[in-house]
Length: 193
Image (cartoon, rainbow, N blue to C red):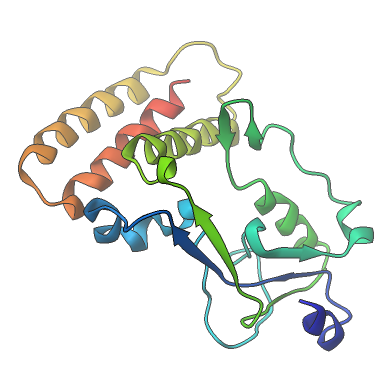
C-alpha cells in the first residue's frame, strides 16, 4: 500500500485483494458454492488493473488502508461489526460510502494482496448460518423494523416455507441447490431476532 499512497497521494483509502488460506481442504458444499459465499470468508479479488472505487464496489476491511486524518471524520456504526458472540458484518460499507459521497477517492491496488486465515471452526454450515442470520438481522436494522416488537407474520411464513424447501432439497439435491435454500432460512431467522 505504501507504493499506492505515493502513486495516488490525493486518495483517502486503498483496498487490495484478500485470498483465503483454509485450515484444511474446503468441504464440497463450500467449493460448489464458492462464488456465492466467498465474501463470508473475506475473499476479494477485483482484478489486476487499478481503478477508483464507487459506492457499488468497495474494498473489504481485511485489506483496507485509510488515512488516519480521514478515518477520524467517519466513525463506525456501533451496531455493526463483531460484538459479543454476534456479528453484523459489513461495518466498513457505510463508512466507505460516506467517504465516496463526500468525494474522497479510493483506489483498488491489485498488487497489495494479503492472505486471510480461515480456521476450521469457520468452515462449517453452523458458522455460515450464523453469518447469514446476522445479515437478516442487519436487514431488520436497514428497513427500520428493528424497533417493532414481535415478528411480522410474513417473515415467519417466509422462514417456514424456506425451511421446508431446504429440508426437502438437502435430502436429494447437490449442494448447489440446497445451500442457497439453507442461506434463505438463515436470513429469515435473523430477521426474526
